[in-house]
Every structure is written in structure tokens, then in C-alpha cells.
Length: 573
Image 1 (cartoon, rainbow, N blue to C red):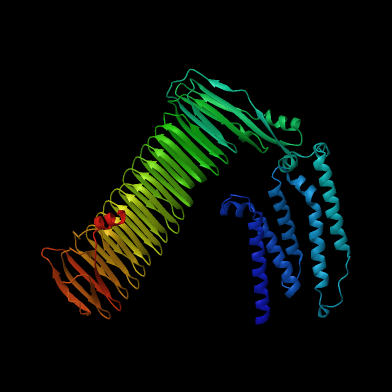
Image 2: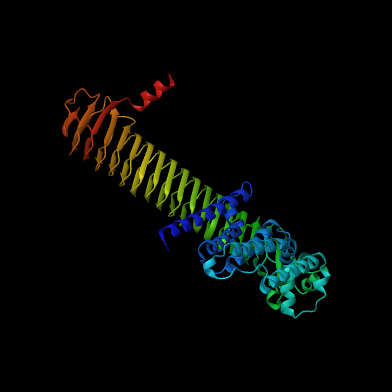
């Protein structure tokens, strides 16, 4: 391939990609998240892939046939139509939009004909037996699908084997819901253990009943309500009871058809509940004996629980609130937890974590997940990577977040942060600040305890510090502004970066500053020699802290400023 052809092909691919992104942005539903509408409109990219293959055939004969690209476009069009018509089954979608497939086929055929080159032999004919057969196939199947979709009795009258009949109903049938009478289990202890096992449906648990009440709602697809009811009548709850235990499940394993089962359970408030569900949601409220849940490919919504909550999740989201006990969540994608009166242990990945008002200690390990937390009352540890962390109003806090931006403010205790390739921002820390980072910039304000920052290739700015400061970086500047006369030692180690230290005019200290290829510049301290030099050792007052400053190829500025109280008063005036 020549350079010109490569350039043309690259330009073509870029143009098609931009066209696909533009279509997605235009068609994206309002107020939808980026991930949500990308998932919802993925067929647009399938169509673009087909267009790329067809245009590749037209321009360079790569691929050698446009057939594959045409099939990609057709499949993408059908899936996109189904996205915009969620109430239609597959047969109804095809019956309504089969004309689009005819237009796609005609367009590809025109491209094949008009892109023909003399070197490839005789010009192709407009109509060939194959093209006529394809046109007839699209027209006949489209008309049949349209008629069958409008008259369900056409296919429902067909006598098919069990497998084909079930496939027909699940793909092109309508959905019907049937509710069984409630099963009531009495003569049980208040602290009875209730076990619910369900799949392909939701489980809703409500505490406060004097007995165990179970209701089953069945969702069945069929060409008619009569046909669907025949299947629904064979689906029922299976309840086993002892004086201490009640188990609730369905007879799904005895049936071959596809259907959904939604289970609604009322239990005594003090019951101990265990629920297992897959491909559905778990909702529980009002339980006081504790809850254990295992969910796969669904969601767990838990609230108003007195007792411990333990969630084992697989490709599932979790929402937990108002729990008077410890909470353990394993394997979540997106997790939202609030008003937890006990400890929290959470593992998640490739999603997001939101925490609000957690009374007990917190441990979160959530790689590739954005973490937002507020109101952490006890010592907490947050871990992630390749994401971000935003924390406010917390007690003692440890954050381990490589390749992640970190923001923490209003921390009533020590703050320890480990990160890399990031932007770190801290404010209003009552305890010590300890930062270990690589290629990260650090900006801190109002730090009441000792400050220790070690980074590289990142700027360090610390405003309004009160205790000792130790800072180390390279190829960026270090700026330290004291709130009051420093009460601890200050040490700065920089490489190829400027150092600026601002202290109150009345400060006492012992200075040891040196720069290899720069100058020492005292500003406002009349006691210091004003002659610039690359090394300066001096003392102001007695019994002051030691200030040691080292850099290379940049200057060191020691500037006299006002204390924070004086600055605040002046601003108010």
C-alpha cells in the first residue's frame, strides 16, 4: 500500500469514527450518563464498522467483497431499531423496519456497481439471480413478519415441537403476568430463619408481619394469554417449614420454558433472613434480625435493617442505607451506602463507591472505581487505582490510590496518602499530613499538624501550616506559607526547582539554605544579609526551629509576611 493510499484510508476511518460518535451524541437520551448512552446506542458503532468495510471495498477493494460490511449494517440497523422500540418483540421490529434493509442492500449494490474499475473486467450487471433472490427474500420475510406481528394467531396456531415452541414464544411473544395466592406460614418463632432462593426474577422482603407470607408473580411470554397461562399454571412456590426455619423457592428446575419469577415475602421483624437471587433485584426493608444476601447479575437495595448485613455480589450493584449494625459488601460494581451505624467493609471494581455518614471504621478496596465519601466518623482506609478519591468530613484517614486524583478536606485527624501520576488537594486537616507520591502535584491548605510530602516532577504548595514541614520534589517549585511563627523544623529538598518560604516578620529560626546554580534571596528580613549568594547560614533570634533548604538550578526566596490572624483581620477590615 502506498503512502497516499494509507493516508486516504486513515482519513476515511477517522471520518467514519467521527460520524459514529456524532450520531451517538445526537441520539443520546437527555440527562443520561456517558456509559449509559454508549451502552444503549452501541449499534451505531456496528453500523459504522459495516460502513468502513463497504467503503474499504469501494476505495481499495479491501475487503474483496462488500457482503460482510452489508451484513454488519443490517444487523446494526435492526438492533438500533429495537433500542428505539423497546416495547416491540423481534418479529415486530423486523416487520416494521424491513424496508430499511432493502435500502441498505440497494445502496451497497450501487456502490459495488459504480466503483467498478476497467482493470477488473466486464462491468457487473445491475440485476443478477443472487441479487433478485436477496430482494425477494427481504420482501417476503418482511411482509410475513408484518402480517404475523399484527395477527398473533398466525404463528400461535402452528404446532411446533417443545423447543421450537418455547423459542418462538420467548423471542416474538408478548409478556403476561400472573399472581398466585399468598402462602401464609404460621406457628413459627419470632426469630425464625427465612431462606429465599430465586433466579430470573426479583425478591422483595418486608419485615413487620406476624407470620411468613409469600406471594409469587410469574412473567411468561406467549402468543396469547391462554398459551402463557398454561405455562404459568405449572409454576409455583415451594415452601418448607420447621419450627425454626422456613425456606422458599420455586419449582423452576422442573420446567424447560423461559419465564421470570418475582417473589414477595413478608417476615417477622426479628427474623434472620438469607436470600439468594440471580438475574434479578433484591429489596429488603424492616428486618431486625440481620440479612445475608447473594446476588448475581442484578441489584441489591437494602434499607431499615437492625443487625448486620452481608452482601456477596457478582456483577451487581448495591444500595444500602439506615443499617444499625455492621455492613460487609463483596464484589460490587456500583455501591451507595449511607447512614450505617456500624463498621463497613467493602470490595468493588470497575464502578463507583459513594459513602455517606458511616459511624464505624471503614475499609474500602475498589480498584478502577471512583470513591466519594463524606461523614466518616472513625478511622477509614480507602483503596483504588486509575480512578479518583474525594473525601470530606472524615476522621483519621488513609488513602492508597495510584494513578488517581485525590481530594480531601475537613479531616479531623491524621491523613496519609499514597498516589502517583495525579493531582492531590488537601484542606483543613487537624492532624498530621503524610503524602508519598510520584509525578504528582500537591496543594495543601490549613494543616494543623506536621506536614511530610514526598513526590517527584510535581509542584508542592502548602499554605497556612502550623507545625513542622518536610517537602521533597523535583523539576517543580515548592511554596510554603506559614500561618504563624513556625513551631517545628522545616526541611525542603528540591532538584531543578525554586523554593519559596514565607514566614511572619517576627519569626525566629536558624537558617541553612543552599542552591547549586541559583541565588538566595531574603525579602523583608532586615537582619539577613541582602547580598545575593548561593549559600546562606544565619540565625534570627534564639531557640528557633531549624530551616534547611536545598535546591539546584533555581533560586531560594525567604520572604517576610504577616501571620494568618493579621491577614484575616486586614481582610475583614
